[in-house]
Image (cartoon, rainbow, N blue to C red):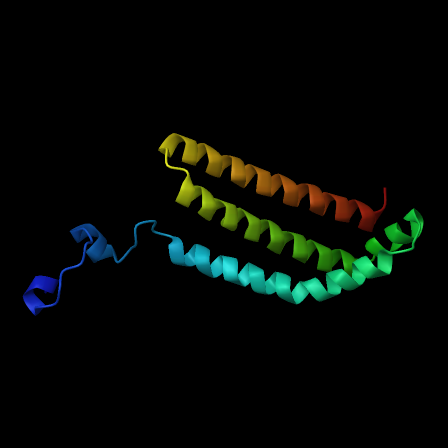
Length: 135
């Protein structure tokens, strides 16, 4: 039964969108949810990361490498970096989708955003692993 048959006001959706129940972007709610989850993860991890940063003040390079190389600190930092990079990727992608109007430029910007976010995360995780396992 359609909206016209029930007397309800018809929406501005196409018949195919009504059948599939998808919005215009087809993934908006999942991105919204993922961004909120990564924000919550970063909010929970910011206190331990701040404590680690405060513990680094006044230390020489060897002592800082020793602290950053401990497994608990490495895991905390890695989780914070993964959450931050995912949060950054989703946030920048939303801005690109909203404000870049040319389809080719939008696609190129989203691809560049994905590569940049992955490269930052990979380089950061590599640095943590190198500190954890030694040079």
